Image (cartoon, helix red, strand yellow):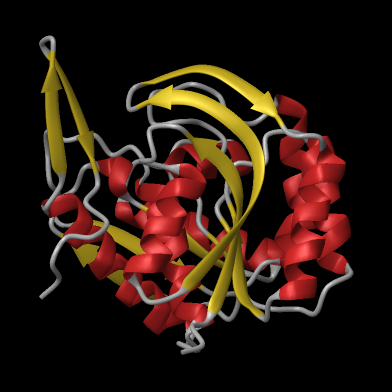
Length: 267
């Protein structure tokens, strides 16, 4: 059996709810062989980031180069890249590889509010990484960073998505979870002005740690299997909704920890 191969370029989350660990679980659950290039080691649990250790950029680049040499990478995604130096190294090596679908999850801030991207690195996303992307998947906090304004409604999401898609000539998936609407709505905005809407029930009262990583990884898995972009987004949205609604929960010493259930039974 030869499974499609998908690459995630992301940080390591020791709680396994986000980052490369969540990406691998997602890819495995969706029938794709996942491989990784680790950019940072992050000490975190849902709600708290206590330490970040960046990997040397040359090591990040070598992981990617070696994987492209050994595997038929069918699609890839980027998650936490953290610094200008790592972003530059990733772009250098990707520009030298055969072009395959790339999902850019512009990870800037953790669900806990802790910063996951150095302030001077945003410009390099715009200048070098976005032009390589098939799809860019910002949440509303990241849209605010990219456009410099708050997004407070579905109509403002639509305008922002079309503005970004036109500015960069790339498809943008604007994720609306932070609006806390029920149902929750995401918008796929393409440079030609087409907007497609995806919705799922909003589930209150649980941690959303890792939802962005899981969503982008599921889209990447769909693209690796040959799905067109709108279909890959739709299938990924259903997968994420299922992982959220069947969430896992542990209690220890009065503290509650939630996690997405990447292997929850699917209808």
